[in-house]
Image (cartoon, rainbow, N blue to C red; front, top):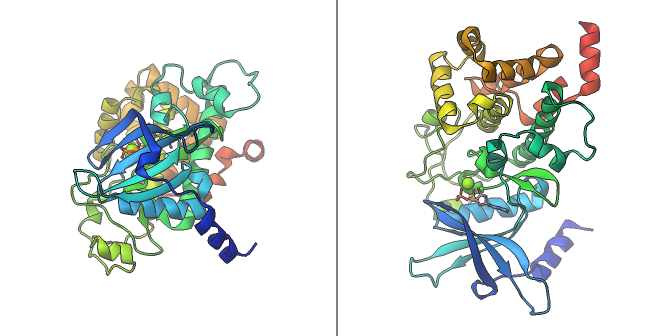
Length: 352
Ligand code: ADP
Ligand code: MG
């Protein structure tokens, strides 16, 4: 099929939703830029109501619609299934943007990681055959490895499309029950580098728990001219970064760290870790040297897990969490890392 024919057909046959079709359900989230609800949608009384998620966003929702439209066409599997976005003017608060996605599932990675049973609570969700390995580091490593592969796969899709997410964190990763895989959500802070849509309102703070150190550099970069109509309309602050995708890689690296170290999963312990790492000039190896001698069982367990198979997990982690963006591995290269390749692992230990 010709791409133009497809676009033409879609223009006429894609369903259009409007305010009156939507029945609000439970509130799922509330941020400074909008609220998120589980909603249902019954178009015909006879049909089963669709299970959807609605975000009522402020004026910044326009960019989020743009990002979701691009993702839907270019890398649909990376993110929650986007249906439709529109401007809603009847609200008393002035114009809002309403965005609709399919309801992917109940749990984010943050919810799942909070369980004492993590990562075993994810095992039956993502691995089809139940492992006959006894509970222990090997089995946990295999589950974490599978989650990491899914996250990097989704992120590589976004990056190959030219989109940097900039707010990667467990709260913005949803487990899709239909796809049996993790998907990225919340493109509200994303930047599209191909067309220059790259807008973060000044009151938006990147989440300091997961942000790479260069967050402080970005706002001082010289803005470049906006090149797309949407960007112009919003008079965005634009900036150019070298290898901006590596910003997301740092965040994914911190998620890897939290999965490996049970003691770093809480907000407080992650904040404390960030402080320690900063004191070590963002060098994970010196962080390890400073904490390992007096490490409790929870820290020791993380090092043990990453040290499996000749330390291949630790090698991957340290190639993601680095101060200099250009020294961080890309999502695509990370997917080819021997950590993900069990045969590769055997070969490696054979060579050693
Ligand atoms: P916010 O800007 O409030 O952070 P998000 O897009 O991250 O908005 O959504 C808030 C929460 O709503 C998420 O953390 C998740 O729990 C839930 N959520 C968002 N999108 C979906 C979806 N497609 N399916 C299921 N839950 C979702
Ligand atoms: Mg969010």
